[in-house]
Image (cartoon, rainbow, N blue to C red; front, side, top):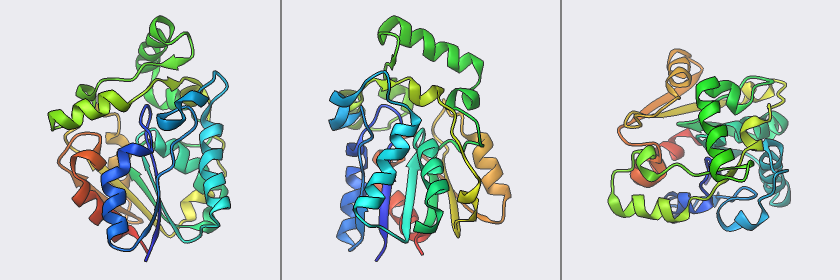
Length: 237
């Protein structure tokens, strides 16, 4: 049986993985879906000082305190920044790295660098107008292209503002993460607001990567939990 660590995207919490966690555990796997500092059930810990390093430290601490190894580490969306930083520091603990409709940063890049000046300006304006200058208001479930109205309502209830430092701080990488034995990319074809096409194309063209497409919106773990569970298990060593 495999050990999975599932890392959320922006505005979400560990709650978003509920359906996938249930399915993986039902098949006997060990699963952790931590909530990053300042989000979900840890929203009360949000401060202007929370940044990308904070979230990388969250996942590193989980791996250390639970004494995990041979991990299948999956990050969704912004979580791609977090798992890249984590994997670069603990590559020897990770057997499989999965980017789920996620960003893949280069050394010295911030999420704002990847998104480009137009999206950065839109985000900073929202933050100044509605987030006290340091909290990025959550986009609606409509932006994530969720298929089911009940799921959309759930996501709208549960998403919270995200500290802007996580988007602004560059990630520091040595490149060690690229030596992880199994690298995978899962691309959501139904996400019309996607910025992930370039990452998907690079992974698709690289014979060293496993590449999959899913016909749903951005929150794949909510829209297609059965299919995602199968892909995660397939990526396990």
